[in-house]
Length: 378
Image (cartoon, rainbow, N blue to C red; front, side):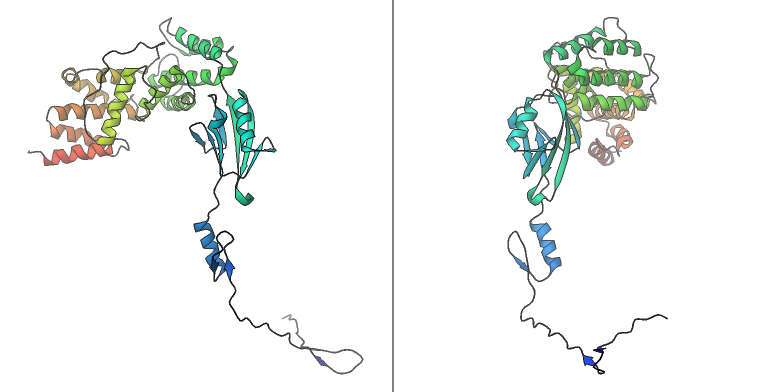
């Protein structure tokens, strides 16, 4: 077994004798080592204690870019609405870099606000250079003339009376001259393809699930565009996906806004309330294609309570219909439960509620209706 011998004596050579290596004197520590926080100067007995204090009491703040009402939390972000320099704010950033060049926060805001198109790389570094966050900002702000052209061509879809894959392709071609509004065109086209796929009509080859993906894409894209038509279409997608709280920009379509507010109130309060119907609905600038399920649900929502009760069997049938997506079947079940409760039939309301008991949107309502069923006299 190999080993390394250790000698504590050294032969000085010609002297013929050995020399003892003297031991180095050990320092006498008359006080314990102290670890001091570089921020608040508080002392700690160990490195581990100081480390824990440093990141609990004085965490490094992550830089953040704020564009308008959005806190940018993704590496890539598209700006579709013109912003003023005051709406562009780097937060917790000690250093700003734009396309590789160091700039002040004010210069960064000015450069981004002036641009109407282009691709920019923004890097923000926090205090002491500890954290750096990078963003890729694509600015795609449509001119008014190009946005108007897109909306005019969208309205032409209804002239023949039928929307199909061929007519959507024609819309895309007709709007190709609107170079600065391509994102607007993409969002509207995704919505139209999604509607055809959801209803399985118009010669579409997309499945319903593929259509759902197109609708989600359309909702995300159009929610970022500050145009009335974009707001309406994004609102329809929110209604389809049971995201009822997103109803702020739906004044041009009272029918949809009333339905959104009703379902949102039911969701938050777990109570059925009267539908808030508009006395004098405004006339929209353009018609927007609806899928058959959304159109039928909105028609039910427009009915007074006595007429709605007469459609209970139809609503019950739709709530079990396989070609309706789950989100639409849930809305039908909630309406059916509301009809039964308004008629004083707690047992039937509770029975329907059991079918959406585990729905993340209406679970509170279901629990209340089920509890009322148990408490009602047999």
